[in-house]
Amino acid sequence: GGLPVPRMSKLTLQVRHTTHYAFGEPVIHALQRLRLTPKATQGQRIIDWQMRLENAHAELQYDDQHFNHVTLVGLTPGAREVTVTCEGVVETEDNAGVIGRHSGHLPLWSFLRQTPLTRPGARLRGLLRDVPASDTRKPLDFLHALSALIRERVAYETGRTHSATTAEEAVGHGAGVCQDHAHVFISAARASGVPARYVSGYLLMDDRIEQEATHAWAEAHVEGLGWVGFDVSNGISPDPRYVRVATGSDYRDAAPVTGISIGASEQVLTVGVAVEAQPLGQSQSQSQSQSQTNQ
Image (tube, rainbow, N blue to C red; front, side):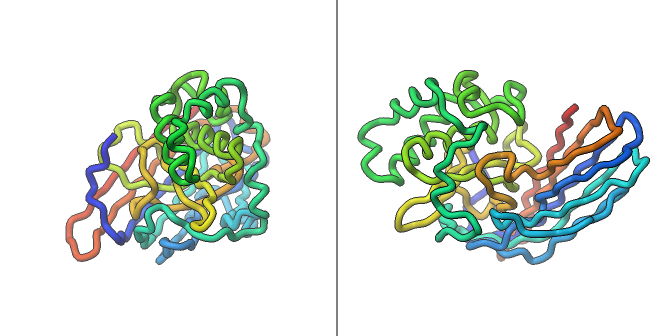
């Protein structure tokens, strides 16, 4: 879809992200790992960020190997529902998708290793062979051509894939969501000798009915530039409408919520996100809100 919000060199984004769990029976014991606090990175400043927990408490907070801010929360025993509300203000600026030099505890070569979600098979290698030869001379041209080809071959379509779908399976389906687009791009980039990683975060959009609660894209490491972002689903490099929250080798490393629960056989998860942008020097605001339910 097109992005009607005009390009701004800077934006102040107000984000509200609510995660609500309803359990079929009372929880005996549960821990959730939350990656819901945006990173302070080049082009992104966290002005304010707060997390409120209902029927849960923070056990500890730490930065993981990818410099993601992680909050480990324990759920109140006997709880039937839990709500996590994150709210804050982030200032972003336009760097044409360039994040810059590599930092973090992991060496750059570790982003060349395929994971179970990104490991390429025959279909993915076939897609890689179809990248036009004229676009393979310069790394940046190759990556833009790869992104365009994936968007052409893997249609954006909800309901065809799930969080455990691999890059190879998504190419086979010919359809997927932003998570799948990111995995296919990462798989193909790594197979071509380019370090790549997964990014989860927020995106201000006002024309996508099927916009997911959180967005995902990929970053590749280009000599001379450092990390550069590619949002395959929208065919662009991230701009000030994007908020980077977590990064990793694949979705599992950067998922907003992962956890274990004992005694809660069934759970319904409802996620809602509202993003409001206040363009500098302008009074009007753009807003987008969306919710989705997973059983």
